[in-house]
Image (cartoon, rainbow, N blue to C red; front, top):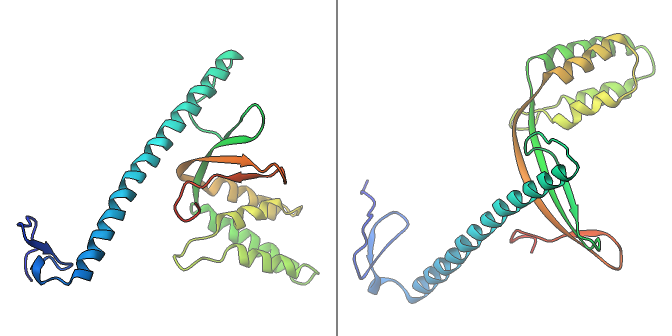
Length: 207
């Protein structure tokens, strides 16, 4: 296998496999396509840098304002976490800082599933077949082998008084492990006709 070329001499272009090709042998349409792609990529990289700078500045400004508001009311705030919604005075614009936590379950989830299975086995003679369907759906894994955390946590909203079920729900709660978080800034403008807030898109696909 040929070693990819890093230094490109004048009069040549490097192709997709790293070979030097004389420009005079490249079709005009291929040169035009390359020029267009390079131009769009440069603009996209510049825009990406601007969006990154906007996001960084927006987070800093929101954090500073939250701190200012806390000082006004002589309140102490712990850290930068937490969702915050800021409205313009006329209510037309809304800025939201959202912190989305990524969670997983540890081995205690298996203990919870065993307790739930015991409950369902006893209830199977009764009139609650929908519970089995609900539970089995909650514990299904996707193609990557991951469990849908929202479905599992949704089981805790069921009003069931069986002590084993309640113990299982406690185990589910204790099995939750926060493994990461991601922060978002979303900007909205209110539609005067409907009164609904519509997001101001900050990505190419939605713009």
